[in-house]
Image (cartoon, rainbow, N blue to C red; front, side):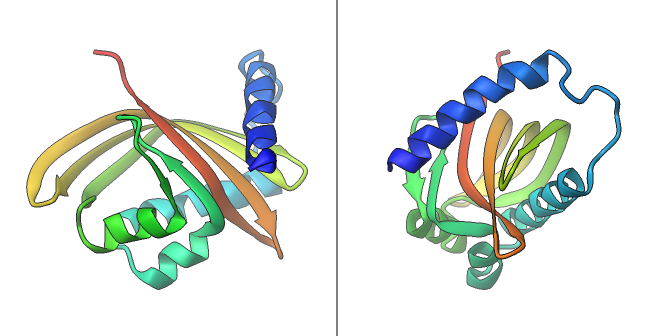
Length: 151
């Protein structure tokens, strides 16, 4: 738990650095490209979840925060998707920013989605922060927090 808190604090501090244009050159490093590919793998897994693709993308210590304040661990996150309590039909990610710091990375983007949560059609427009960790050569999701885009 202390590690997760430390990573989230670190992400908050480094977020200010990125906002000031730490890598404003527009070039994408190899690691940023690998993190971007992991984000795409997560996006696809959210739309078409299987136990295998969710396990591949998420760490066992996952903490997954929703815009309504609900926080899930990995088992709860997977169960919600596999049972269709949380059911994404489409997901579009825009305004994505990636910052890699050693074996940790943070990603911010805007998520626009259509969903069918519990059989009820709806939409979501969220700002999302993802924290990724590289383990055994793979970028895997450690933490996620979303907030609703102000109207």
